[in-house]
Image 1 (cartoon, rainbow, N blue to C red):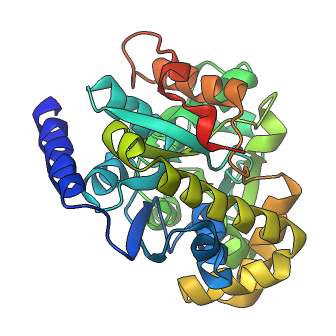
Image 2 (tube, rainbow, N blue to C red):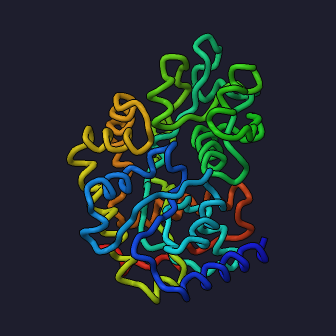
Image 3 (tube, helix red, strand yellow):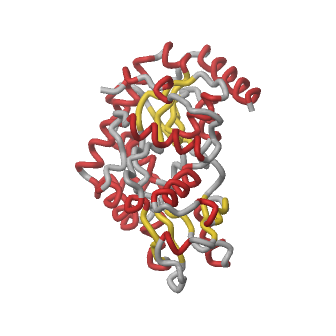
Length: 317
């Protein structure tokens, strides 16, 4: 793994030597699927990136995790929004990166669902049954464990099963392979008539203020192009400001970018506005620590990690 990250870092540095392009693409985890990308869609549509001094013409996507980090490293403009857990894992492998802004600062979008006729009605009913999550050491792995602990349910009394993305989870749920599947917006707003919520994470955890995603950039690029990094963060900040002020119009913009149903996006965005899902870039240090502590619990880290060593607050207004 270390050799892979060294190769990607070297490739990124080779790109830097060629100088920045006039128009750029950036990477955003789960673009086209989940709501992390809304501020970027708004910023592109409204011209906020150009106003700030950077021309972002498109978004690269991935299935999250280390894939997004590698996409960032390989990009001409090596900035992207990635899972905090993926950024920490990469840094722990020796990748020289900086966390320069907060992205999504809540796990309140997550819930676990079941079939309408299931005997499972609460999280306590999962004792002795199978509970699905995406993949080992992921956000859903961490959050599912934290939820069980919050309800004083021994983790070994619930069989947690890594099944993949939401589509795979729902297939496993329908076939009886698991008793509850994780869910998030905007999929929940689309399929909620066919499933029943078992529990919402925001109703189980003492605090759902756990940072999911952050903006990262390589050390080398940040040093060479600090103004461009600030422009990216400022363009996104204006996108966040707009979406909270005009959630319906923001949802329409996202529906266009994602080629999705505007009504579904409107409901999903409205739900996330209520819990202040997106940060304007400012960091929630306790929320970041909660995520990193969760990584330690699921074995994504072998020892405690001080996430503040990766954070550079100088780019956020």
